[in-house]
Image 1: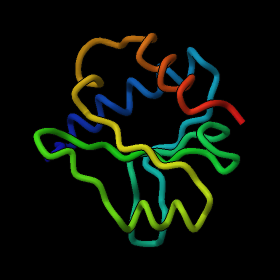
Image 2 (image 1 turned 45 degrees about the vertical axis):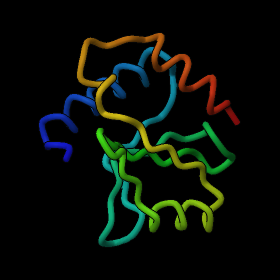
Image 3 (image 1 turned 90 degrees about the vertical axis):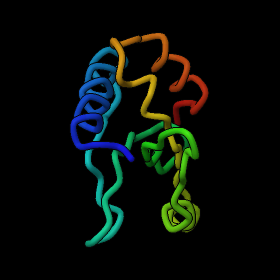
Image 4 (image 1 turned 30 degrees about the vertical axis):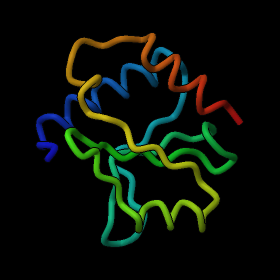
Length: 104
C-alpha cells in the first residue's frame, strides 16, 4: 500500500524531472469523475500521452479498469514501482524511462 506521503515524494520527483527534461506532468490526473490516477505525461508513450500509476512490492498490483480505459483512449499506461522514487532524485532514472516511452 502506497501512503500519501510516499505519493507526495514521488510527485516531487516527477516535477523535478519535468523541469529537467521539459515535459508536461499532471498530477493527480482524473480519468473519470470518480477515478484519479497518480499522473499523466503529455507527448510520451503514445500520441495521447502516458497515464502513470504507482505500484509497490511485493505484488506490484495493477488496475484492469485503468488498463482498459487507456486502451479505449489509445493512451499508454505505465505502472511504476514506488521504490526507486523514494530515494534521492536520479535524473538518469527519468531519462531512461522517457527514452523507453518515446516522444511523440
